[in-house]
Image (cartoon, rainbow, N blue to C red):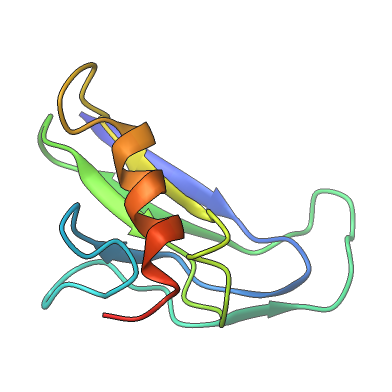
Length: 100
């Protein structure tokens, strides 16, 4: 297992754990950074938040800023290679219009 490090770039983003069924909605008890505002790029001095990966199951995430999830700002840690793939997750996020 290991850790996933999330580096935040301008403007104001989140990393919020969700589910394949509801890509743009936070899951209860899931990982959440809250909003991390960044005014400008400052070389290597950007805020970082870490997620501890404790298993090999998929962990689905999105940005909670208004409009970002339905624009496709989503990702997965441990993506399945078939079936419920990242592409399926991203498609569901884009179809959501951000509403769940």
